[in-house]
Image 1 (cartoon, rainbow, N blue to C red):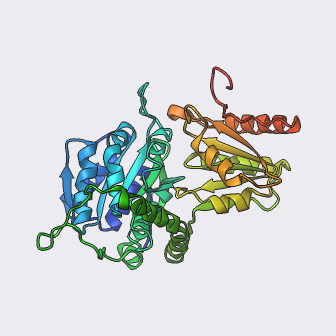
Image 2 (image 1 turned 90 degrees about the horizontal axis):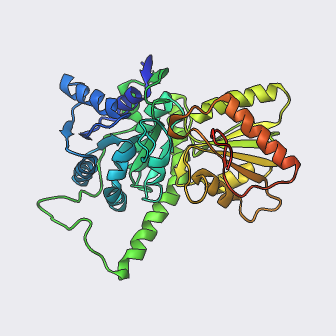
Image 3 (image 1 turned 180 degrees about the horizontal axis):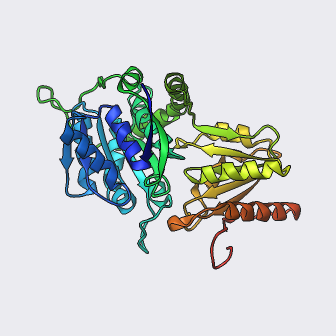
Amino acid sequence: MPQLRALEGNLAVAEGARLSRIQVCAAYPITPQTPIVEYISEYVRQGMLNAKYIAVESEHSAISAVIGASLVGARAFTATAGAGLALMHEVTIVAAGNRLPIVMAIANRAMPSPWSLQVDHSDSMGERDQGWVQLYAENAQEALDFTILGYRIGEDDRVRLPIMPCIDGFYVSHTTEVVNVPDQEQVDAFLPPYKPKHVYLDVNDPISVNNLTSPDVYTEIRQEHFRALQNALSVIDDLGTKFGDCFGRYYGVVEGVALDDAETIFVTMGSITGTVRQAIRDMRAKGEHVGLLKVTAFRPFPKAKVRQILASAKRVLVIDRSAGLGSEGPLALEVKGALYGLYPAPIVYGFIGGLGGRDFSLVTIARAYKKAMEMSAKGEINPRAIWIDSKEGEL
């Protein structure tokens, strides 16, 4: 039977990996994800998980090891954060380009310099165009669920791509919450044993992997990769519904809250969403027509659904936990792209906040809402991001 347990987000991910019956885990420690692979190590030691555990010398080696494991047909897992993910950059595209259904949990951590142990999304945003599916978890429950769901999505023949479940460092990774943990039989029914149709490394039938190509084929290979990501949009919704039928928790590429009469809609990803949910309840109690659009799948970006949901709004307030240096927040850019050409179109206000672990509080949300309403009343359209919680003031 499913159990209600008090789990931190890192342990929730590890439980998801255990329940998914991973066969290989390559591990290298980095804050704040280290407990994920420590818990998995303990599962293997205690015989709770029948898997090969590989302690490697770097994050670059960790992703290389799980690529090798996936190429021989194993269900493979790793985890990283921040600069560790950056060190993998050369190889993350290899995992995606070879269409390998690896799951790699990211405990989001700000990128240096200056160094920070705390959360923002600058690490995973640096990998957003590498061809991975990226799912952003709001809480520990989603951390567990997206690990299991990730394998089902990635192993689907319509997709066959690696999955990056992202959990906000410390806000999710180290926060203890009540989590509904399914039993093994339930998970086995939803996620059967991995039986790859293509085992690439076979001593009896050797082939070259990640070999040099010419301009005659490179574009078409990339086009197939692009098509697989587009397929993932419907697959995520389809399997998110089937997940709900099995476990009672339904997922999709986006989630809407209080949208029916919303004139102003917040757009969020990750743990900030929980705070905005409370802000929405508080503002609605005061008669404000506000709503929330939570983006779960940032890659592939659900452009059509975002456009459809936001089309009737007057104002859209996008909250980015990534600075978007040299431009503006990545989520704001995607939302603006989704709304391009729509007439009449809502005014989009992009807000940057919560960088380096700074708390994005109810007070900050109220400040962003007030700022957007003031600008809207004056007919002001600010094409740049608004740094809403900077002590130096807005840019």
